Image (cartoon, rainbow, N blue to C red; front, side):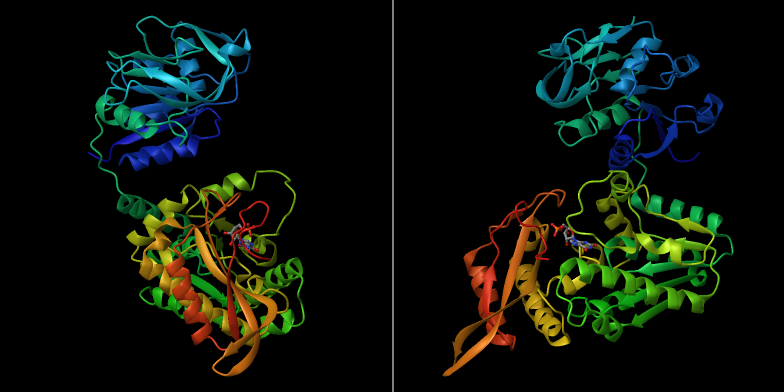
Amino acid sequence: MGRQIVIVLDFGGQYNQLIARRVRECGVYCEVRPYTTPLAELRALNPIGIIFTGGPNSVYLDGAPHVGQEIFTWGVPILGICYGCQLMAHALGGRVTAAQDDSAREYGKTVTYFDRTCRLFRNLPDRGITWMSHGDYMEKVPEGFQLAARSDACPNVAIADEARGFYGVQFHPEVNHTEHGTDMIRAFLYEVCGAAGDWTMGDYKRAAVSALREKVGDGKVLLALSGGVDSSVAAALLAEAVGEQLTCVFVDHGLMRKNEGDEVEAAFAKWAMNFVRVNAEERFLIKLAGVDEPERKRKIIGEEFIRVFEDEAKKVGAVDFLAQGTIYPDVIESGAGDAAVIKSHHNVGGLPDFVDFKEIVEPLRLLFKDEVRQLGRELGLPEYLVARQPFPGPGLAIRVIGDVTKDKLDMLREADAIFREEMAKSGEQQRLSQFFAALTNMRSVGVMGDGRTYDYAVVLRAVTTDDFMTADWARIPYELLDRVGVRIVNEVKGINRVLYDITSKPPATVELE
Ligand code: XMP
């Protein structure tokens, strides 16, 4: 018995974890293994199917990754993607060559025509956009295979040997740009491999918990909890796995939104672990006094955070593991090279140098953000935590323009809470990526009752974005803006003007500082 498993055989492509994620999304358990894994080891896993990933090489070059012939005779269905497709074609007697002219090289979105008698494409429209990224070309299709899809430039975009359950696609079904890509993967899993769809995030949780228990043994684990989604879910998972061996240090820097610190603390009350909340507001405010330059604020907060954490870590004593809530997109991004620093985003990435520990554990390293949220729900974390929008590490300090004081922070917290409350009531928040209030350092004249006021202006910001690299300002209803504006001016002392930010990123950024 045991759970069904699909192996994603890794040939060094960029999207391998994305393939794994799609398989999981289809309710099937999968593991990514390097292509060098001995066949006996793969067989021992008893997979219902194998997916060959893409990769940067050309199959006909010396030293290009290959697999033994036995994988094709063992009777397991295979889906080859891009390089994986070419590899299969090459191994089974087809011919793959460099595209002679540019017209046969394909990169980007390509109109593709599907043969709907193929099991992969049976329930799809007869054409769709696929995402291509290949310079090689299948000149001769191996024996037993039929053409299953074509594009205007290329007659053999997909090949199929229905009898053996072998399929190859030149495009990337796992990326969002490919229309119906997940449907193709689902068809492979269910129609070809006979998947039962027996895998859930609950299974993932149980497997992760037992793997963590095994790894940690009776060691001590320390985690810096920010209250963001990732560190919270990592904390909950570890709490579930190792209970009191875990110490979470929650540095409350006094720069959180209204009630946030208490909410975070409340969410973890159900686990028997060591939860340390450090009220460090004063420490941070002293350091920030009079500082108005955004990057300087970030630096001060980042450094102070480490100091506070370090002090607490010393109290805990030597730990075996430092846990971090790194998620898969962080893993990819950290390899992204040296793009210009627009803002030095602070998170807890700098900690390892300062704390005495033996090893790092990153239990969310292979998960995507929405999977992390799902796992958080599975662990019983409250919705306000798992559905939380991104919140910058330096918190409200970079949403108070200019120097930061407790009074300004309190004003901003109230205004922001009103904005959030009205957004939640209106249902608008579901379609927005991020929204918040920021306090400007501009004071202007107003009239309230019969008196003159000379108070601060608050800015409301709401954006939609896929990746936060670019963002569009959100067109939220005037009536909603009106309600928020009226309430803020009436309810928050010290604010007499409310502005709405209508700049996109670029040229602006999401945060005002
Ligand atoms: P920007 O303002 O750079 O924001 O367009 C893009 C996303 O990053 C968040 N952000 C930060 N996150 N530390 C963080 O952890 C920071 O210093 C920081 N600055 C911006 C911002 O909230 C948005 O989601």
